[in-house]
Length: 177
Image 1: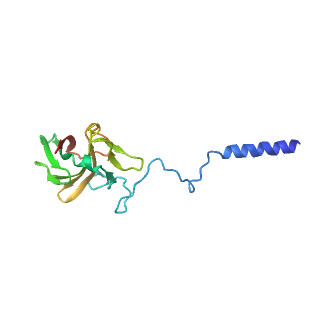
Image 2: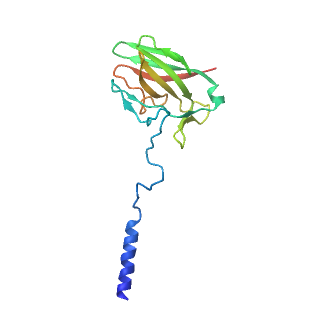
Image 3: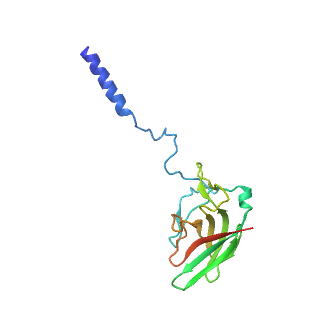
């Protein structure tokens, strides 16, 4: 009887200790930080370029047509304190524009008035109200792309924002049609 009780106790301890052990190869749940694969096969995680500026790869963006049709352009602010440059430039959504007095050209890909990331990691907007405005841009210096990411109006220093040793870019506002 004592041996049977001992066997049950040992079995219980082994069973209890094995709870919470995760076999990483069989894990099917979502990882804490998911990498999203873009169309060109890259992972969507930032990569550095020759300037040390982080360049994030394409993320999937989904904007309802009625919201996308509401906005015409965005105003982007550009500052360079060393050279005394402080300009604002209007860039049409979906188009490229040179920023006067700088070596940059900006392509505004998408404007998201109430930016959110849905459960699948897709960048989208909750509504047409400008509660959390963000713009998806690409910045070129000459022909070289040096930034592919987001500017956030309410959180201009948010991770992934444009970082350059001399210039600061910010989202000022949107322009409706």
